[in-house]
Image 1 (cartoon, rainbow, N blue to C red):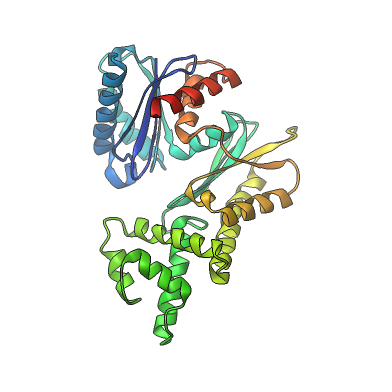
Image 2 (image 1 turned 90 degrees about the vertical axis):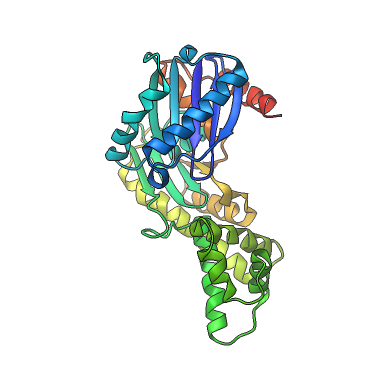
Length: 327
């Protein structure tokens, strides 16, 4: 039996699954971002999640032979060392083989099924990761809103919107349609109250990212500025792609999947713009939507860890039984 997980800044999705792809239990637990929470808190959240899963499946932990944990904030070798020091406490039998990776790798695997390719992850933050035919694994971005501004992310989109609102306010202009929409979203009456709405939040970065929903809603209504913001964000997201391409070897591949993952791709205009830019790059690049959620990418990882093939039949069964367990 396998345990796979996909952990981020707001939640961690966990699954118990057998080698044939049949999901035995599914649950969602607390966040697991190493940078924000530290190794011990992440381990405690994972421990609670695993307890819930085992109780749901009515199995003991000692039946878990392999585990693949994809976690947010696993960015450096020091991060890996810190977490590797605490993870053995999750497996008292000390016989489980386990692997811990950055959560973006799970997003990559969810679309490539472990084969070479690239993922563009645009959620609250942004990052790209790529695996080439030689096994080289590279990343671009993911440095956070304070250092890198997370270009192409929901934070990036929300920040552009809020900056526009405050500039117009400083000029003495009345709030335009886009400003009124975000003020309504925030439940405030004047633009300057948006500052408290952001800075008073538990996660200011996440609060700014929420404003991206307003931008997309306005773009759907035909708001020109909202459309411009989304197109600009999409272009900056694809810059991650171009940063990595010269460093990678995909020779001999007729098609290289570029997986589109994360909440920003729920925006039709944003998604279409990224797809068009990837298409314009020519062969062998092909934009793809993942066949399974990121936790499915963790399942791909655990199959590889166990030395088992990743077949279409197994992945289809995983997707089907995961949907059934979630109902």
